[in-house]
Structure formats: structure tokens, C-alpha cells
Image 1 (cartoon, rainbow, N blue to C red):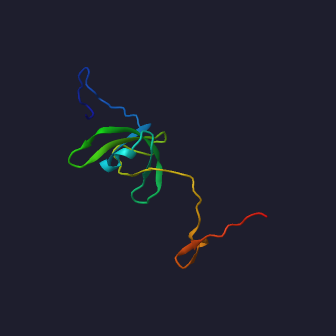
Image 2: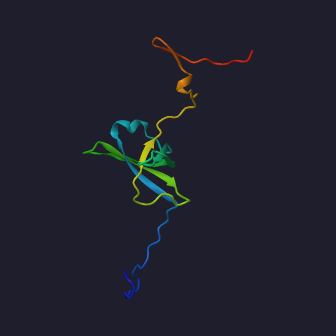
Image 3: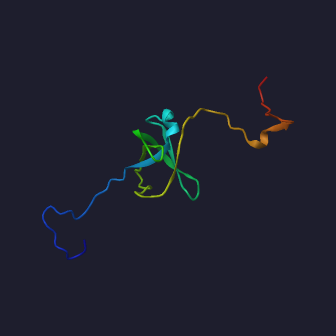
Length: 125
């Protein structure tokens, strides 16, 4: 539609899009179907820099497997209150299959003797 056009009653002249939440469609290999759960964390990653753009959660898991691709459609919902994400934007996504608290050790703190690795731990006495 352009300036000067006539409109009829009931004709749409504008569309309002709510971007406060966006849904991402993922194709997950059917071999992982037993591990998929609603509420699983999905991370968005910038394709060029690899930086994290935020986290969402699995909101839908299709009950059907795509016959040609052997994949399952999964949707993840991402909050977008600041409007950083756009519809049609290219992103990479990673499903967090399992997370457990762990101790992170810098590689420079690891000593190797033969085929074994050691880390020294300081204890109070």
C-alpha cells in the first residue's frame, strides 16, 4: 500500500507484531527423541561471533517424525523484552541435554606424569 491508495471497509492497512516472545523451530534427529523434554534449555548463539544471545525453553515437541529427514520438530520460546531478536533472523541454537555443577580447572593447573593427569589441591590444616 502506498500514499494516496484508497482502502475499503475491512481492508488491512497495517499489521502489528508482538515481538516480546519469539519461537524458534528446531529439527532434532529422531535418535534423540527419548531425551527431549518440555522445558529443556536452548541457547541462542550468534553465528559470526559465537557469543550467547540468550536462553529459551522447549515449548513444543511434535509427536511425529519427518519421514524423509528422520527429524522431530521442536519449538523453543525465547523472551525478547528488549527487542534484540528479530523474526527471520539467522541464529545458531544449542539444546542443553544435561547440566550438572562441576569444578572448572584451568588447563595450566594440570600436571601430567606419563599418561595420567594430576591437580594439586590446597587444604586447611
